[in-house]
Image (tube, rainbow, N blue to C red; front, top):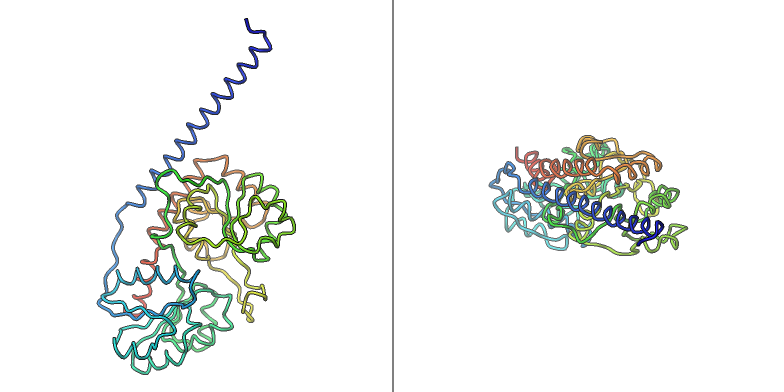
Length: 373
């Protein structure tokens, strides 16, 4: 016969095993439910955008990664929205290509590698030109100078509208980037990546200073970081097992990490770090970064520092979650890691809103409407 002490021990072991089995069943159900709902949202039929009978000459950034995925998103989408697309680089003779193909529009991304005399020559042919700036307001010292050479200027930062107009650009429009769903999408089967909390991005100093006081609390919740410069963190050695230092991930791998992470942090960079920015006018940043849309497209809960224009795109507390202080960030991480249903529903609503309103097809259709009516 078992002694009383041994019986208690056996009961505790069985109880722990039963509890673990029950927790595993719940976690499996939650994961399957999330993936199933995401699959329904991804495959939902959505209205198609018109195909315009226009020929577009697109000039990519010429900068390689990380700009090349944006070039891919734009070129792939434009092929679906126009009758013909010609793709070029800043090193090509753009005036010769324009004379050869007589496009209805020459569109440039970024434009810092593209000689402005090329654009002037194209405009002299009577061909409309447009530019989509990629990094506002961080490099406006340079972009404001080239903006008047284009007929249409598109910026992803609301606060850059007036500086471009003041520089002499006649048609300036607010057009943020979006999610390219060939890259950013949820994993529709159980993800091989299992993280509670993650951040992917460079260690700009504002991020280091913001996160440093709460790193112990976030590490307790399972924080994992991928990115460059994180050895700037004075306590880096304490968190080295949680930081994959110096790794640049492509968009597909990034999306897989987002999709397999319960909560993804999004902390915007500062427009005032002089060693990496060229923003002598001190233009504030009000608009969400491209990561905002990309994370939301992966059916994961996003915790983002609240920018003024964020609510234009997602409803806080419904489709996205925000924080203003480091303590608020920690509190919300703890809440959502213990409230799976609430976390899951916000993540799914973010996915649905993104696929409905924040794809490159949405954005480029808006651009073409501005230019061609």
